[in-house]
Length: 489
Image (cartoon, rainbow, N blue to C red; front, side):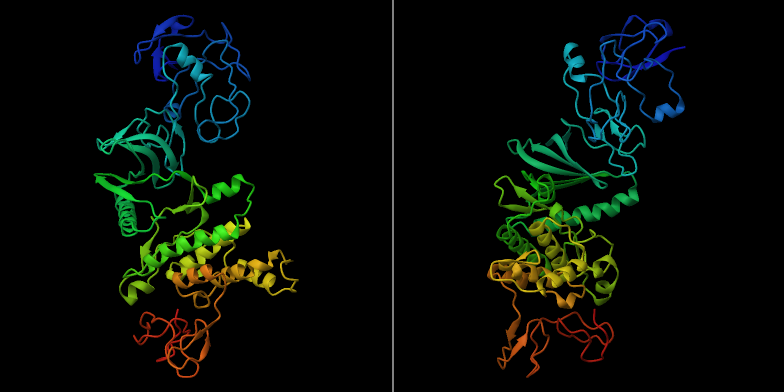
């Protein structure tokens, strides 16, 4: 009965007769000769943890699961300690990763080079979150679950973009480094949406197309990546954007033992992000990012400039009161999202909450815990005062204004936060927390963010959307409608 083994030259599975053990055979795929080791009972091979049969019959279950590598001879000793696909620590003598399923090959580079071949290309990880198995680089669908695989290096998309390497992989697809062959080999990043379900594809396509439109609307801002192209053909979609040469701030912090960045540098980054939020919030209807966090801020190679990435979760608030009040898709990152966003009702001030959490993380090295962080900061800021320049409850005296700014914008109630990204940026520039504002009519001093002057009732803040009960407008900062008494959100 024919048996099945893997060619050491091309890694393809081939069928061989029972009488081939101990002989040289020619691979039908690559036409190169390979030696078929004898069965362990006749000539045992030495591996790190004992012998493994070189040939075996494939069962129906094994057709779904990648088979173990064939024995390559007495010198084939596995020395790999980390999986090359997912970096998981391997057990001694393992022939496959217990985490992602990647099949290991003993000294693959040496074997390939000795046979005149090229070095082994990296495996392709399945983008299906429930699978994640590593597949050979020539496969187009996952051997385990049948999902489409990311493009392999060397693939040319749409006759123009040549894939160089995979940069990231997530539930929605993959991101590659590529070159634009029609623009003098210009380096670009390609976001590839991978989806097999036609209904799910149409939903994801809306998010994908919206991200391209938002990026185009923000092209005048230096910290937003440029978008070059958006291509949708059948059940595939690719977004071509500027390649960002750098690393996200979270990875940089984690690699440095969560050491914080200087507050002056963090404030500069915050001002740049405020420019993006101001532009988005001033759209009609307003656009809300919904996923500001250190992971989505890239630090460039000069170690000072940043780029804000991942606008795929951004969405508009709707043009009518009904659409504004309707629950949205719940997209958020725990610790950076305010309560109203967690229940599916984000607004522009939700981004200020996320920005405050991001700046707190960068300036302290500690992950924010939502409005609980605001309560902790309040305890620290109202503790016993220390001499000027000394540390009070772990917070430098000179930076109290910064942490007070963070505390305010991590408030549970949106009305207790700043009302706009412009106000946020202004206080970052002046390095202070604005607490009072003069009435433009009577010059009476009022507390900042009060909706009406306490003396002449002149409106001091911008108008809010109409009241859901009576349809009349109020001013930002009002808790209840001044016309009907309805509670305002």
